[in-house]
Length: 273
Image (tube, rainbow, N blue to C red; front, side, top):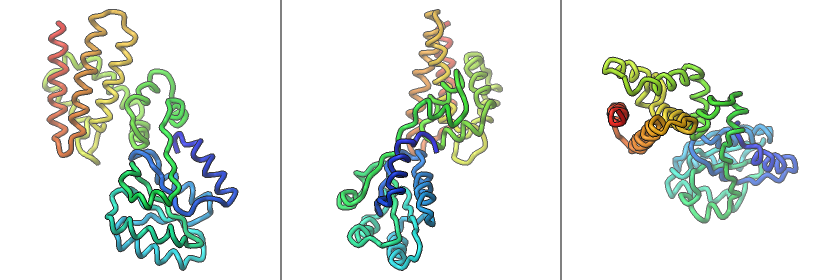
């Protein structure tokens, strides 16, 4: 788990003192480690860990089972903000009559998406943001490589992907930054073959790649004294930031955005002469 020492310390003390709340909400961005934290809690309790679907029938069935347990069990509801109002309302029962051997943990990106009556009866804990030191410890990295890690990863999922890709990813990013201004049509196609434009596709995730490209350009811009060369990297940062915003749009064709990114980067380079 990355960067959660403070939260682990607080929860660990509650577990040791047998004062852990029976109803917990973990708040954090997708990929921040909420499920991992819930499993860590279950391990600390020597309890079974059960991930539960968010349908109202699933919620009601688990609640009924929880009153019949003979051993401690942690029930985990991922992305509880996606629950129906009926499912959220069903959970109110366990806040009024807590089962003796059950713990309920909900994860959400924002408590505002849950019922106020639910959050007011829960103990809410926020996942900590990752620091550069946290990422360094997890990855065993330092220097320029660590700077890229820190600036191209927004959550645990992305950190793990970049760690998995290793040097191949950083070599590719550096190669593209070095040659993007002069890339030919055939080389652009070869570049695209290494990029994944949809979830689960083979290659480097396009969003993470663009974040890393931007981070490398920023790193170079900060170290270069030549105003013209620095200006080139700054303009590339701006172009890439614009394309990253477009990629966030739901149902957009990411490959088309990437094609336009290549075109805009080359246009910016040509404009500078």
